[in-house]
Image (cartoon, rainbow, N blue to C red; front, side, top):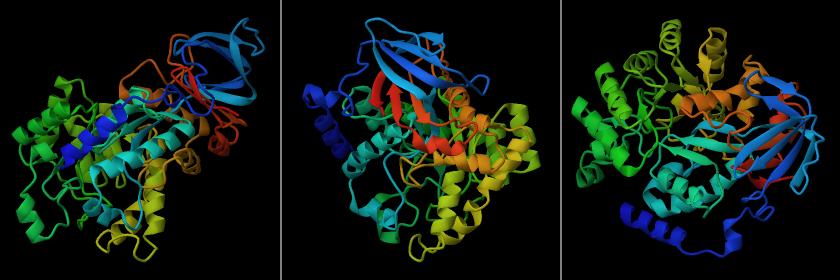
Amino acid sequence: MRVLALATLSATLAAPLPAVAQTPATNGAMGDGEPIALHCGRLFDARSGEVLGPHTLLVRNGRIEQMISGGNADVLGVASVDLRDRTCSPGWTDLHVHMASQSSPQSYSEGFRLDPVDFAYRSVGYARKTLMAGFTSVRDLGGEVAPHLRDAINQGLVEGPRIWAAGKSIATTGGHADPTNGYNDALSHLIGPPGPTEGVINSLDDARQAVRQRYKDGSDVIKITATGGVLSYAKSGDAPQFTVDEVRAVVETAQDYGYRVAAHAHGEEGMYRAIEGGVTSIEHGTYMSERVMALMKQKGTWYVPTIYAGRFVADKAKVDGYFPEVVRPKAARIGALIQDTAARAHRNGVKIAFGTDMGVGPHGDNAREFVYMVEAGIPAAAALQSATIHAAEVLGVDDQGVLEPGKRADVIAMPGNPVEDIDAVMGVDFVMKDGVVYRQP
């Protein structure tokens, strides 16, 4: 049924649309193949972390063709956008989202009541909100809808950020991404134990098969759940759930396909095993110890804190009925710790990149993570770099994350100076992705 539902959605999205529906609704086809000059009052230089003075960016064919300091340069015969009272920045990247869902008290029952096509249609609205908030790229770390949403965005059928999609997360039996957690006996016997095709492994061969299945499914990145999780219907939120050898089998097989591996991890031992096994990034990292931090620095492992999700679930744990009772104590205990972990990781020199776990909280509010990072003692410039040049490094790409000639024309702008006042990130009102303007003042 799932395959049929997704096939139905794919056919619907692939149907011919009127030309106007394939261009940004906010301002027609501005930038769609035509050059544009952006006159920026200030410019955030992601390499140095400094805010520079006025610049004019000449954009053509989806790339930055030229950068002219001074910002008042007239480019004859070229449409222009006046951003002289704003700070321009590279488009942001959120390295941890779930585009097909959004937390609510109904989240657990909806998995039984709704079809994949329902989640897919919801994701279209979530994608647009994310783009309009200034996030021109995201890494979707778990969800079968994401590869299809990615393709629809790439085909110009819907508006949204560039997506690196993990598809189904890889877990062990009973682990954080075991899709049958919480099922009763009758349903469990009817469905049978999930295996590598469903992203559940219990051996090295299973690990290899699960990665190969993700390749078959069209994933761009691999995600494992190296420990228990907060929102899964299971008791432990931090116990290790992979052996080092299992992690290594996932990582080595992923490398065969050019994939990087992200590891959801809250507990100290599971984190250590994941890092030892060669993952690219640790997500959440709640109980990160000095021992773990030392290994991360030795291995060059990135940390994606997701402070937003921690604060959100800790707040919702106070609300009767929002979470199942097996989830509620984990949300209260673990969620409240992540901001402090991010602060300790920064002080210890761990490499930090930006991610929110959005889908836990409401899509479109992603930029609030910057505010929480600064509250944790991370300088505003470093927080902004974590979502630009450092996020590009985590993804393994070198054509985005900075405003330079030859790079993708992913440009956002906001009133104020976010390095001086981080709250400015909540006011993004200009968004360009691949040279096309989707939002402007």
